[in-house]
Image 1: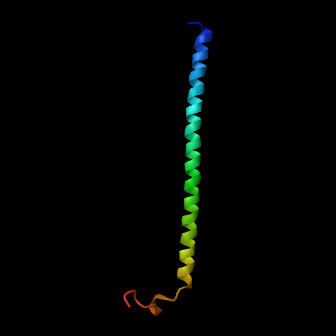
Image 2: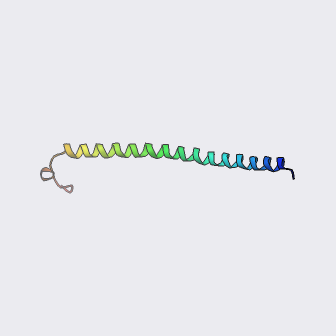
Image 3: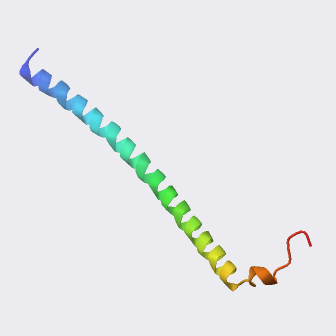
Length: 67
């Protein structure tokens, strides 16, 4: 086997590896985007709940839930 052939095989293997890694990184980026959107929604909901609790009547003035 010639040096050129070995180099071509090594290059082909390296290109396959780069393609595989690129797919993994692309998939991870998409998952991270989804997770970031979910975290933003959760933070927004938590802030809304906190604001609702702050504007609600004090607990001493509220009727128990079974009333």
